[in-house]
Length: 324
Ligand SMILES: NC(=O)c1ccc[n+]([C@@H]2O[C@H](COP(=O)([O-])OP(=O)(O)OC[C@H]3O[C@@H](n4cnc5c(N)ncnc54)[C@H](OP(=O)(O)O)[C@@H]3O)[C@@H](O)[C@H]2O)c1
Image 1 (cartoon, rainbow, N blue to C red):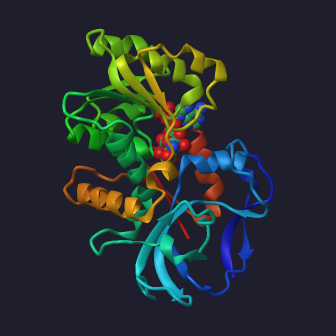
Image 2: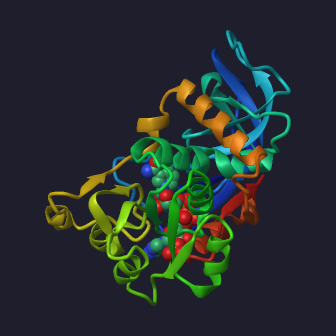
């Protein structure tokens, strides 16, 4: 048996309950893992609330989609990973648990010089930043980009990486308290979008031209304005919906010489070789100090509800770890 945080219905953080669940032994092609660090991601709060589209849940549902840990047993036919190896994974729901079974092909090795905490804090967020800045809009020296929620988990990683690639980085945050953090992690300019008109401010900062790409994971509250921040032929990369989904009518307002894309992690990191290549770049960037990893919150597994409440309440910054 393992302690796990389970959902029996959609709702507020209080619907997260910790209980004992069976784990079993690994079948063919599976490994058993003991988690050491579980990554918290904003999408999990949306899954819990039942507002995540295209993801019908079967209850009881073990929450969570990312973790690092140690292999404790391997099933028949498993090659390339053995008992005692340190591995991480993302995209396999059920990570809010002490132990679990998982397909061996989803286990990604953690290098000796990368801690389990760093792996769990950066795997999903760092690979998201990777595809956003190298593939959906390849950031180059001379570009100016706008990133909403710059003090968040993906935000601190992406802004540092984009700055290193030579971009001018403008970030938005919802409180003055988050400004210094965003500035210390890649942002040249930070706008408090709860107080200031970010469209006017971006125009001012760019001499009226606008930005080459706006990375928008806030959506409902920002999308139409994000379009207005673009330079001619600029792109809004709409990769999340922290404030809710975009009003469908908003898409009809996209100017003819402005673009929009709605990318997701599985599209870009669905294949194992894509994940391994992305991780190599991510861990190299961490080793070189290009990305300073900020684990700014830690919660015990039994306090997962508090972690969700804090993330939804916009109280978290950088990465958050849940410890089993
Ligand atoms: N498409 C993909 O492949 C992909 C993959 C990973 C993550 N994502 C998305 O990327 C975003 C960042 O993920 P994360 O895990 O690193 O989260 P995060 O940025 O640490 O947290 C979400 C942030 O969104 C901002 N926000 C804006 N409106 C909000 C609202 N109404 N309620 C709550 N927060 C609001 C808050 O920052 P301020 O207070 O500064 O506004 C908050 O800190 C999320 O939207 C997530 O779904 C997408």
